[in-house]
Image (cartoon, rainbow over all chains, first blue to last red; front, top):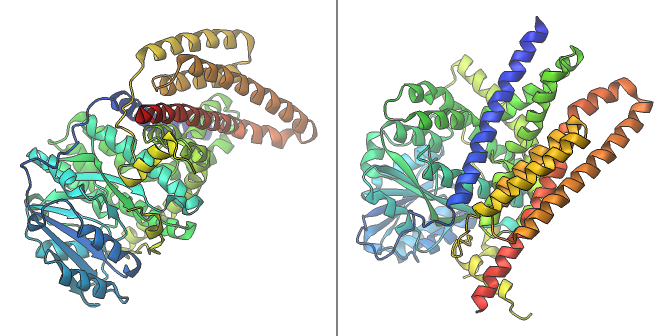
Length: 427
Length: 153
């Protein structure tokens, strides 16, 4: 009886892993096949479509990096009379506010919104909502303070909004400080798989393109009708992604709108960041799963993709569970099931590496980017996957405890930035 | 240092977009078709000469490798050679590990059977991922060299 139950569970888990594997394999083939075709998201600076744009930059103790992004914002090719940059100084205790004020004095389109300790430090979503109230433009874009965009990025990001069905847009993120150490190199590989393949494929296949919380934006009226960012969710970006789709709009991936980020530089920072992402993502799964299944605005393939996307952070835990139940299955002489299960588990170990992009997805992404030396590190992505198992498990346990105890407040553990990425900028 | 075609291309990437889509990939369906023919042929040989465990791993590798590398830029001969090399490495890897397994099992019988059963597929994935990474590096180098030559001309 126990053996049958374990076998059934093992088969279900294997089936789930195989579904993710097939999904990513299909994504990879799709991008590989279509990479030679003209991309619809290539924007032209000469277009007549130039709506007014508000760029929100939330910043809490970002002294090492805030000057870099504001300098870049002053160099954008988008008309400055249609651009408004709002720095939300979220109760910083360092010189972030002073540096931002210096730029605001020099450039009329840069504004600084200071939040004191009483109203600030309640997370990125709260800071962005404060910025949204101050913003006056048709399009709202957001950038993290540690990011460094291309000069023409605003033109690239607003172009998809010519289509009235597009409610939001997401640009591409690449790692600025990639050569720093092994952690930054592995994060860079995750980003390549996630953006070059995953996001591109989802966009071209008409699935759920994910808003990543930065290097992207929304129509202002849509964002306001949705009530802005949900301050109770740690993955406010994923939450908005689903709210946009449930509202009947779509998110466009603008792969040519490229922006550099300063990636986390050590395993401790990696833990903090991924813990926040995984717990937030799980919150979104609880919040949106049934809404997605019942939605009349989503097609069947979008619903399938949405379910897989919402549950992706549960997968490392389920892989661990598969591992654990395989041991009793072995002793209960269930070798046939065990053989299939372990084949799937071993593939999945590599399939759910890093930012949940399989090794072949990262490989093809790096190939398309011409990153021939980056391939050498793909095998090492297994370590980030193994590291994700305790991260996701702890996030899940904490989430369950908070749900049982009725705790509503969420603690936003901010990622700190060293500013070392400046040394990699070649102007 | 003299500026070669490769360094010039690299400079272009680091200043602007990190992608190389200016020279888009051409989907090579004929390479893929030919690759599947060879993979089928190799699979038949493997099924008749190897144990089912080894044959299953190598057949999976062959079809996976063909579908994800043969459509890429590069000479068909180079891809076929890579495929053949992958099969040779796979056979050698499995042969060495079976020797290792027999050797260890001789001393620690029961416990090692569990470990080997559980870790066997994972050990196989290690060579597949590593070989795939090295193959992509090779194909990627060819692509950048080709672009560099076109950049020069």
